[in-house]
Image (cartoon, rainbow, N blue to C red; front, side):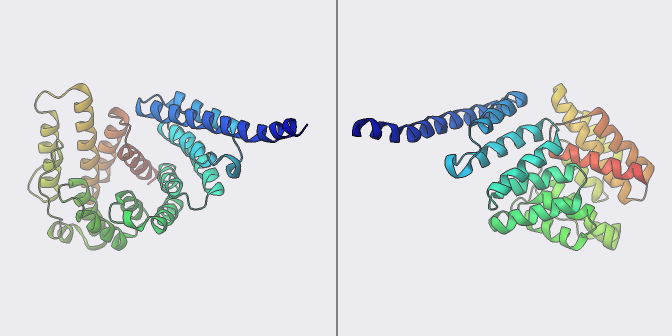
Length: 284
């Protein structure tokens, strides 16, 4: 009788252990699927993990499962669902820094700028060491009209990477909005060598040493693959749009941002930045 009682008492622990292993395996499947760009498969594996263990205290895996599920939805472009998943993860673990950061990105993609900044700031309170490198926060600050703070954010990033033309351009845009193009050009951050085509031509454009057609010619030059050419033309049109807006030519800005988003789609955060900007211009 005592032996039977002992065995029965051990059953819940064994069941819990088995379930934890299953959840861990499903989370691994979800992660591997993400790396292979199999986003539907990733979401399904995370969903199955959530169905197995919905008790954070018992299994210790639910927060990770919501993060995995949200990450898959993020890459599928299902931003509202991703926000909901990251919110659930935060509800289970208020110190889940990654959930705040990812939710901040998804809030931006939905045009919820104040919410995006709030989440990025919560993330940085938990991970202050990531502050200098948080260029996404700088972009959100720009769209909120917080240009002084945006400048500081991009100046901080320069300490990590002095070869990023995009960082210099966004700093330029912040200065231009508050002090004018002339001062923005005079304070343009110094860049070493950005190897991405056509970034050096973009830099020369904002420095006043190149013309818009130089950027497009550089993007088309050589023998890039179809994917490389698509990426080159996306960035060319994105930054031509931002350049023309800074110069006061809203019509050309709309044209280039429309070209970037409609004809050169990328699975990258900057494509969403271009889309958000395009939509803001269309509302004007």
